[in-house]
Length: 476
Image 1 (cartoon, rainbow, N blue to C red):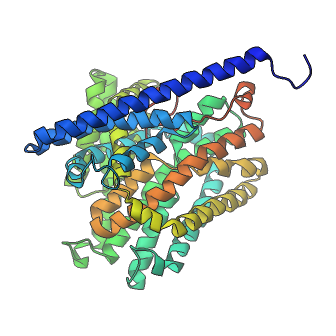
Image 2: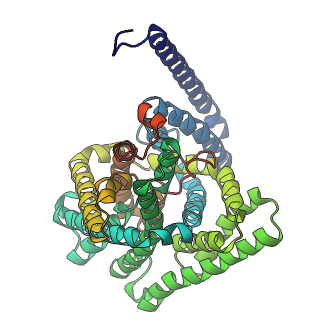
Image 3: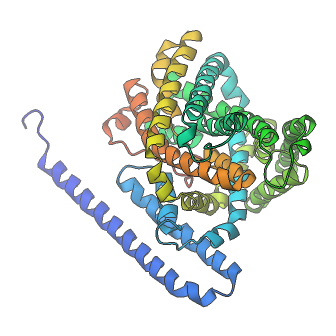
């Protein structure tokens, strides 16, 4: 056989695999069309009962979003992009299968998903993993976080006259909302990172440093976001409140109280795992639900409370106990995450996104450039120039925590928050698409990917619904 030629059997096998993949995709599309047709026939029958209509929509979104997520993998896109796309297609912007009223009725699903995301993010942060590379992780994170936060926030301030949620506001409020957006923009994605490390088998310095940065960043970003949101509520009181009601003492309690209550909750969960350790599937949902309710009743930050609880549970529990709870939580939360991302897509107004393309591109470029420069500076500061060349590519992706933060902003500021969420989700969709591709390229170029991964075509998975041995669902 001449050098450089491809065996005939290999070419035939490749064509056969392509045909099979095509047929599977077509079958999924047909099933989706049948589901949509059945939905359109059944919905009028339950028009008088809003609860039953919301339950029907919930079931339809699980099937529809999962199907489109699987189709997204055929064209080498992460599943989460498919979930978001399903929400856009079946939301008010296109087919209106998921109406605005139904979306409001499913708001408890979003709240539960946010709680699960925060708890799982905290549970991913193992003290031993961070401690071994603490200096490098800390310096890279400080440099790229600071530069990214300042760069994105400053860009929004400069473009205030073209940004809907900033237009016409006084300077103090422009700064407050710009900081809120920037606090969301600096979020990374542990789910994408762990999925690609599992796929490529990478275990070298670049892989370990990237994983450490994205895990620690979840804690830092929730602290940052909590402080910025509290400041924004002080400068721009939400409808129905006044500035006097948002005192510095209440701001301090929102953050400090969240850490205290989260620590107590995490300790209680660890005790349950040690002495009871039963019905973990149901217990996982109860932890997230009651954790969020306790945070609401105590007037503390929900995300920080659940994140602290997950961190304390993981680091106080005996070896293996926390892993068992995480697996149970992932199984029980899988449909919740799928619907959560689909609802986030339904929130996107295509008309607004199309009108904001001239803002989306600069934000993506400035964020990427800031992370690149910040990582290089941090790595040089820590004396790890090799990591600096590649780690930034693993920081581009965004997912669960970022969407959770955007949802929190909408809950506090329904009008301007919805406009901010639309712009942010459009930026996130681009980052979530290019991020896995860049990180896989970094692992291959650094020589840390396995031989099989180097020869395989890139198909990174960043789905929130995975097995426990791959990416954990919706963590980031």
